[in-house]
Image (cartoon, rainbow, N blue to C red; front, side, top):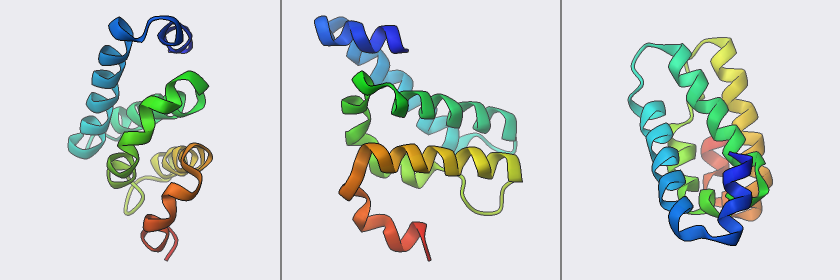
Length: 108
């Protein structure tokens, strides 16, 4: 993903649509993953990679609300909860003040 992020700076047309589709698939997997915590955990870890790669952060910004809504933060296994909180921390680094509308939902 880091390589694709660097390549997207040079020529975004062939790369960004595919990466956007992968990100949307990961969000859908988080929302509709069912009871399989392993796949939801893997999807959350891949979203963390998207958030950490600086070149892909501009791709993530339009999906902030979808990512927040899809993160499993309540009534899940502790392992999945810790990965979700890590993803939320990375999202806070990317979004900065864009998270203000969701603060009450995230920190009761």
